[in-house]
Image (cartoon, rainbow, N blue to C red):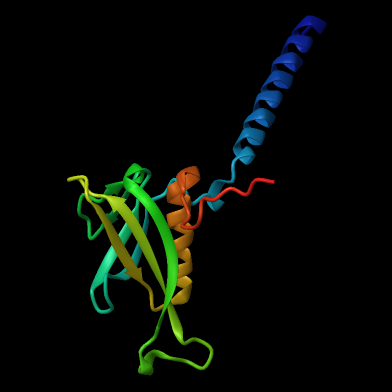
Length: 151
């Protein structure tokens, strides 16, 4: 083998190694397993009142309750969280309240409606709230005053 053949082989190997390194960097550029926004998430909750079990899921563009048609992200007008006093037998010394989340949205007929989601497990409620905020993305409109202070 001559010097030209060896140079050619080395340059091909070098280019392949650069391609491998670039691919490895692009694979590490995203957050991989830590990403939760793109997956379908499902939560067991109580809908409207305690005891009314339901399953709430988020897909890329829809929020669905009990596998119905659900609503699109654009239909949601506002979201907010609150707490309700637990029943006497559900209370523990450090936890007298359970999380409650509200979603006001535009129905298919144009009317506004509000859905209520209750969670006895506060960790599940926090995961639901985080998922709802991720689902809303930059369109999230928190409840509160819109008054601007002018000097």
